[in-house]
Each structure stands twice: as C-alpha cells, then as structure tokens.
Length: 285
Image (cartoon, rainbow, N blue to C red; front, side, top):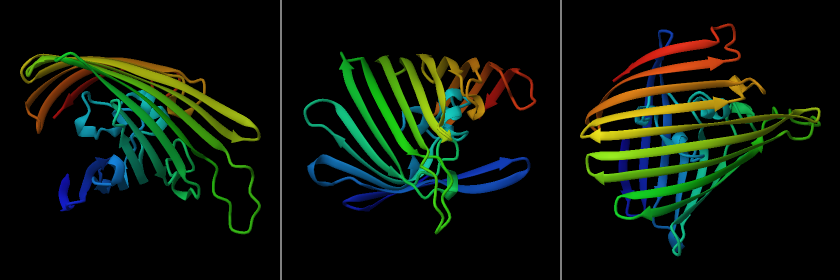
C-alpha cells in the first residue's frame, strides 16, 4: 500500500495484491489512482483503478474486512473479489446538510454484471450517503447506490449488433455506531441488493439479496461479531437460494496485525456438484 502527496493539489495511491491459488502466485494492481483534493466548489475527483463505492463493504480490501469472508449476497452480484474497475469518480459534500453525492464513469468490464474484459460500453454509478450524529457517542448513516451498464458481448466491426442488454443494480445500506469510550463500541450494518439483468430475446433475470452484521468491542483490542446472509442469485443463477450465518472473534495487537477465529454454517441450493451444506472453521492472521 503506497501513498504519496504528488503536489499541493493531488495525492497518489497504489495498492498491489499478492495472492496464491492452487500453487500459482500472482501479482495484480488492486488499486492505482490519483485523487484531486482541491477542485472548485468543494468537488473531489478520483481517476484510475479503484474499488467502486457501491454500498459499504465493497470499498474495503480483503485485509480490512471485519470478518473472514465477503458477504455472499455481495459476491453473487459483484463477483468473488467485489467490484474493482477503471474509471473516474466525482464526489461532492453538500455545504447545507451532511450529504455526500458520488457520480462515476466506469469501463463496464465487471465479469458478473457487465460484458467483462471485452466490453465496449461504459457503465455509470450514482450514490448518495447521508450522515447524522446522534449525540457525542453515536452516529447513523444511510446510503443508496445505483449502477447502470450493458452486459452483451461487443459487436464485431462492420456487423449489425442486437439491441444492447441492460443491467440495473440498486442497493441500500445503513450503518449505526455507538462508541462510549475509546475501547468500547457497537457497530450494526446492513446492505440490500436488487438486480435486473437483460439476457437477450426479451428475457430478464432478477436477483435479490442482503446481509446484516453486528460487531461488539467489549474491551480494548477484542472484537466479536455475527453476520447473516441471504441471496436468491447464488453463483449468478436466478432463483437459486443460499443463506449463511457466522460468528467471529478478533484480537488486534495494533491496527496492523489481527488474529481472528470464526465459524460459519452455509446452505446452498447448488454448488456445482459440491455439498449443499457447509460448515467452516476459519483461522485468519
């Protein structure tokens, strides 16, 4: 994670991901962007490759998640690693009320929602996020997101293409935090997703899902939490339900080092030949 002030007007961020899967190692650019902090009228811009601000959890890197896995309702809609995209974001914090507005222009290359790496159509994102302080020890925040793009394969040059197949993804989220002292806190969070995806021939797919989680910090450096997931779009298949419930305990030596154990029970209608029910014990460093 490399960050630097480029000049008085811009900051640079470069985040490299090193990962291993089935004995093969890969290095990828998870994020690499420039932030323009001093635009006129209070605007702020981000240009490059970034985690798309659709909802809340999608913006977090894997090592920053409060639990071992991403919510399954989110990965069903946005993909296994969430939604990472090239493009630009313009944001504005209104001067009258604590409301932040986002507008994003994206390449439209998400494999789950859109046309993938071969996309020749952009995608568009809008988000509004409202923040309200509740006394000296608590706050609540509400958000709403909308993504529009196309999921059909690009048309070869000179060929006559079929009508574009549209993708519409809507989301709503809520976050509540109570922190009476520096070493005690309670955080409750939930997100909901609604997908409408045209698949050609006048057909459409509909997906719905959501999760809710609660995390408690009873004393310094210790956290415990629970999460419930539900989706009817398991592995991108319409009317294929799954649900999961899990719990975890985390110990933070500092913000840079965490040890976590967790348990999860997951039930799925289809796992491509795997067991429909799965109990998992996690250990995470």
